[in-house]
Amino acid sequence: MTNIEIMWIVFVATATALFVADIKLSAGRAHEITRKEATLLCAFWVIVATMFGFLTGRMLGFDRMIEFFTAYVIEYSLSMDNMFVFIMIFAYFGIPKKYQAKILTWGILGAVFMRLILIFTGVKLIHTFDWLIYVFGGVLILTAIKMMVQKEGDMDPGANPVLKLLAKIIPVDKEPTDGDFFVKRHIWHATPLFATLVVVETSDLIFAVDSIPAVLAVSTDKFIVYTSNVFAVVGLRSLYFLLASIMDLFRYLKAGVSVILFYVGTKMIISGYYKIPALLSLGVVMGILALSILLSVVIKHPHAELPEPHKAK
Image (cartoon, rainbow, N blue to C red; front, side, top):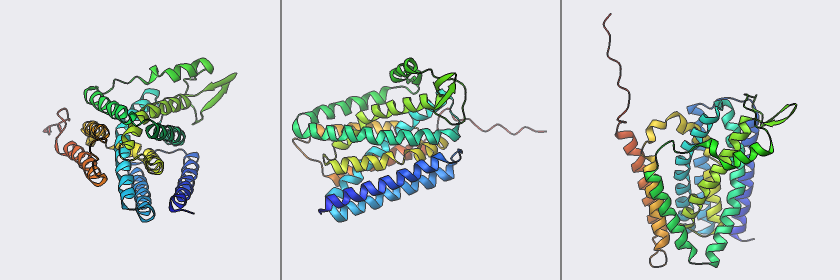
């Protein structure tokens, strides 16, 4: 058995075990995930990904390890920006926080299978048609520019075409439920939880169109691209609740993600003439992400509320 085959077995076994544990956890008592719990879960997922990255280096070599970490950081940083869209979706449908974890768990499971198809298709296309790498690079640059100029709140979850199609297939109930996806009221109705899940899944599909080409700029190795994507995606549930509790600290994250997309798009376009070393790319991506977070913390929000003056009794 080759090292790459062993690594695939390790990955499948690890991902399956963690998914089963996560689904059982979300199927238990519905509760609101606190900032402390979200922070610990985020740390856990990052540690697991880091250990897997080092194991990749041990089994497949230093270059593969650097490619994994670079792809993971890119995917994770893009996921941070996507989480703010999920916050908007949950607010639109009025989903209580204690049920949001369940929706995210099943949404992540669906995302893993969708990305499996997209990644293997994308890698196959790039290996078959070399010129597609320039198309993907151009798409990333256009996406980066669009992200820079797009205003917050432009997205309307209710206008989702898949949600409109769902309403034609099965009635969507607007009454609050006890965490069920479907409820029977004379006939079966989809609940707001299921409608939210549909929008989350379709939104993630749109995100994947941006993020997967970004990772393909780092490597076209199916193992590196898929494992880095999965390890970034499985941590989204805890990342969502962490970011939801500290949103104001990441005002410049969107700008940072835009610059990262522009960088990897440019990297893809010039790849035929000059290949940027993987270690340098990792440093650039980490630097941009760190700078955007640092600026968010240092520069105060211009509309931040000032403390009320002390009133004399």
